[in-house]
Figure 1 (cartoon, rainbow, N blue to C red):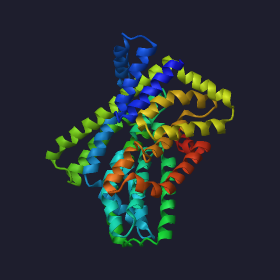
Figure 2: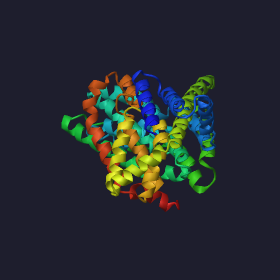
Figure 3: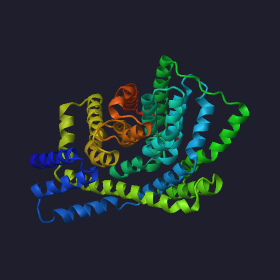
Figure 4: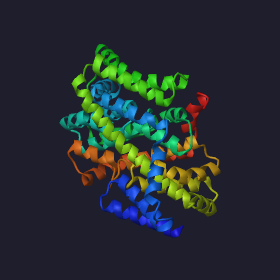
Length: 431
């Protein structure tokens, strides 16, 4: 077992250091582990079989549909309408554009289910606007980058679907509902930090929107916000499953973008479909290779050994949860969310279940933890997108991000040690 762990870790770290894409790093290191520890001949065949098995899930069919829905929403003028609506709610306060940025990211992230899409769509408009108003560009980018992660907790969220698969069947509907309160709490925490910094730096007060104009903006935004109501409401009411809801989301976003808002032309649809296929292929490759790595870890009894070691180390639930969070925070700095969820859920879920922790609660804690990794170097995908849009660099961004990192960790600790935050809403709906 020691040899297999060494081969897996060393090869994986070396491949990452060589800038090999994460999916290939996972796949190659898994094959090397099999070659050294099991049997050379069937290694490639076995990995191929495990990859195929890993993506052979009805629940995963929801992912390409939600990706397509997010693509349509991103191109369909949704971001601008959500920003205008957010200005009505919080734009009149000192530093109001920072609050608008976070709230718009929350709205758009919830609709698109993608932190990268939210960073691109909202940041592409808000960062230049805030720059013109005299806000510091690193602060503006930090607000956008951290605010966009809230959409991974507020459903629909592809990563929660992945966790459902990795956990062996935690209800996707329950996970969707459970993400609301932690996601909103995270958004409020980011707004609080933005407010303190804005007051200290005396950033300008935003425009005060009149009642009639505010009502108009509300009605402009309602069709976009209805997507969440239709998708989640339909799942809760039992009209359709999460997978079927994703198809409904595509139909609704297509109707909204093409027929109602008319911001997407028919001739643009092939390019949108192509982009969806590219993104889906990347996600599915990550899921396939991560499933293969999870299998080799299980074959070598690594999850069981880690579980036994943690339990032997201490029987304190508080200490074990803290250790798991620290490990995940480190992992999140160099590994994408999808493989991290697929690889570490089988390792840590048995531990927390043995401690009496609800798998639903652990799933929200896991996703919130890994959201922080999206904003951290060296491989934070949202951080790189934000730096590109904000025309800044990671070194300059680090200082601006520190206060936001702190509040994200504070919210993580609250969610970790107060299960009520994750479980109260699902319990209200009978989950």
